[in-house]
Image 1 (cartoon, rainbow, N blue to C red):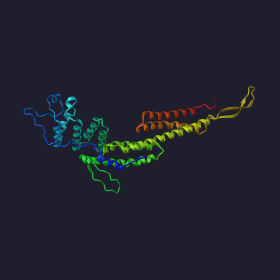
Image 2: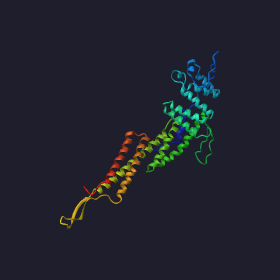
Image 3: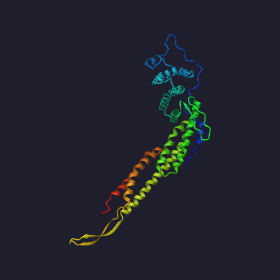
Length: 349
């Protein structure tokens, strides 16, 4: 039974961490002053000389640049430290640097660099919820206009919610929740309708929608409870439908084969050795009826698509590769039986 709760996401929102928290709190400590007689840090790409002389901004200095909204110098500083590897990178928290870089591009309303930074954040972590949070924020940026997201009212008669400036982390969190509610409102009816269907295309379309909302749900609530339930129910319904379809084809094929191989006795006039026509009893298999060859060809034509759909459905809903391969083999074997029945010579035993 499907359990869909559009309010569950809102309830979980209070318990789940924000998908992309703002940079750490500002500090009152000013940047370290330049050493007398030492040249000011250079801008541009980091060089080996920079690393050797320690001519690099510290984490504290980078944070201070962000707190002071000195975004141009901040991006230059980040360009120096983010490429560092090995020991040179040890003093820096890479995820924190990327978070600061993201917030900077958001404040500057730079869409392409913000999306590129989110992709970099997803690639830089093995934490799946963090990856999904980054992907959810990418969706939000792309579905916003100049970093303003306008939620749709839950009902046509309802007053339109106020636009949200997603450059602000708090408003961004609210926009992500609104986007999740909107997507769930579209997906849930499709899933419910597909559960009552006896054809695969509606199930496949609903499954795609349920999978598509998963990143957003995890990114907003920290859980995929609703989308996981929808995918599981659709998968079970789809597999049951495919199994019943193939079993029905198999039973029909058994009936056709049994009838076609039924022994019948027929009387025919044959020419004797003396050149005289005489009546003679002959035994043969009945063979296929007029419409049965077409029915067998239809089974053979439909099975490859059913096999691919079954294979993909099992894998898409978390099934094992062995189960997917078994569904594929079941369809392939039935296709071979249909071909053998169609091409058999029923005039001979």
